[in-house]
Image (cartoon, rainbow, N blue to C red; front, side, top):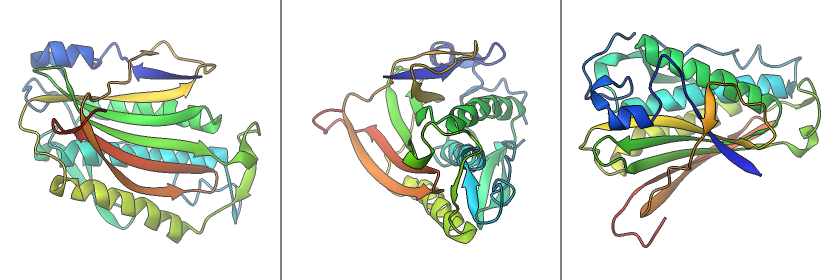
Length: 255
């Protein structure tokens, strides 16, 4: 049984607050009360994440996957115009020029989310991470960026230090870069967002997980009428990540 969780911080607004009270949100490009600034914390590098040459553990793989999530979320926020371009800095990663937030409170929010995501990845309890883009005027979900996660069956029920054969670093980096290139190219196939928006992150996890106080259950924020584009995937050999984006399409038959 899988439960959807949303991160709620006392210092930041959860999705309901920026949607209802846009002029005070920290997640909306149309709000001008910003006190923000810098980059999603770098997790362990792919090299140091390997326990020893030629193998990878759940711990190492979780660091790689959560680091990818951080860059992917930053890229979506930049490419979809949720924040102004000047609130991002350029950073080289995966052989690409990545855009990362320079807003301090947003960075802290993302770091907190990714820390918990990484913990759930280590135990094989995270099934999916979803970034939702929501209209602050209508409260409707406009886009759902979904990252489905599956754990290598050889590691299910094993300790976090259990290992499997590692994929060559160059090959893995290329797979991750391919997804990030698709996110960058998303402006060519996704509808233009021409209204004030907020975003939030949803984690689908096993119902048995330990849930910190900062997290609470959430609905799935589905789109009533949507079209979907499947993106590429990558596999660390411990975790596989498959990406899709769904967007509002009033001509579609249903969700």
